[in-house]
Image (cartoon, rainbow, N blue to C red; front, side, top):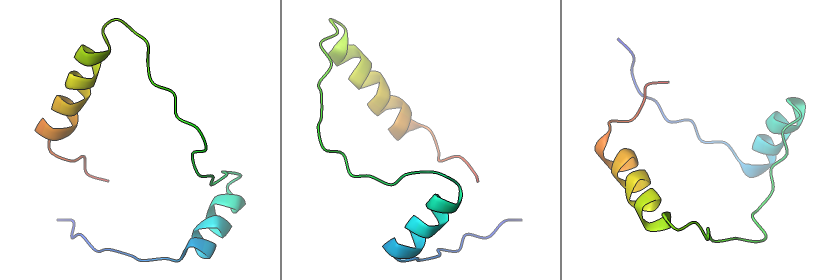
Length: 58
């Protein structure tokens, strides 16, 4: 049985861990909206899937 335990770390430590694994941590500077004709259908599907399914176990 797995127990859930939150671990809090600071931003500086997170950056160190990511840097060690060659992963960059950057804020989003721009945002582009989709121009797809089925955009609303796609968004509704994403909302359904992310809200209806239980979270995956780590």
